[in-house]
Length: 438
Image: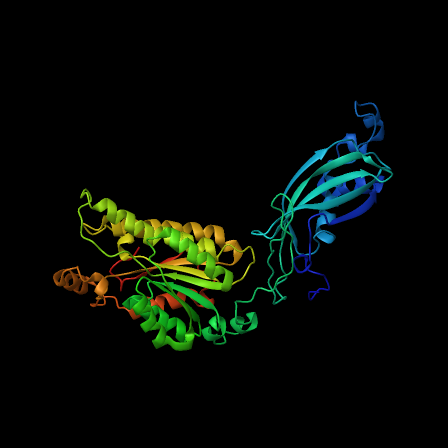
């Protein structure tokens, strides 16, 4: 109930098939008031003698006067106060005469969860003969919450025909904190959000992956470490201790194994997030080098196909769980002219970015945010084949006069999974010190 004593439309629970009706008998007084208000004094409506001598054979109720009762039905009954009429298609099947009593009904035929919108089937029929239809049509109505109501509402998917999920009232505070605390700018502890949540980190045994894992642990997450080297996985698992929920020694270039192991994991764990930091080893090859085909295959498999396999296994549930996330580590090269002899690496990162954008679009309605970070050149073993001169040039060219560090990337990732960034979806965050400004 809002401050004015009305039940907000958005706060109700609606289902496909729900129906409401109102009844009205049309009188000369109705026509007079409508004509005075609108200026429509067409004698077909207002002059009985004129109308009786015309082809219509007598006075006809204004069509829009009849339609106005559909507005009453939507605004007061289904969905009621807070409803916003979006579109309306109407058909007049039979002329309405003075004295006719109509039953106007609206039935929910579909629900659009993404737009918080009801699709209503409208019928105006004779009160004594439902088969005598004067007016029918289809209306699309959005549900708008009252500003005084500190709850916001979403439409959750249920099993209903023809992609018509049921609306259910669902509180939508950011996971782990209240809407009140956000509105009051209270400090939100990420540890409350990620506490006990399992995050899969690919490439977890590398320098960058290790920094990301440490950041996640500091925020209370449980980690599922994914890497190729079992000894390195064991070593980092020991360092992180009880924060590790499990390790997976699996080469991401083997998609069959990735799919198999991810399927097993999904049966035992509820994965809350995926951070894809793995990449195939860098190679310096001309774009037309015969060996570049193999490099392309390896990079695309590790950077793109494996992410698709993980997302399919871990994020396929229809259950809407706000806060879940997918974050991929890309490269600043996606913003600018790619470096020479790195077509396999850069093209795979570009493809991964395209995949992230598609995931953001299609998984967003499930409460899953998909984003990316694109770091600049880092001084890590992964970039060991890049010359010291090239690194010095990049450092000198950067406005901050240094190279990117793994901790910079880890902090950018932490920002993206922070609930306060809960409206960021489909974003590629440059971690470049200003060297690349896309």
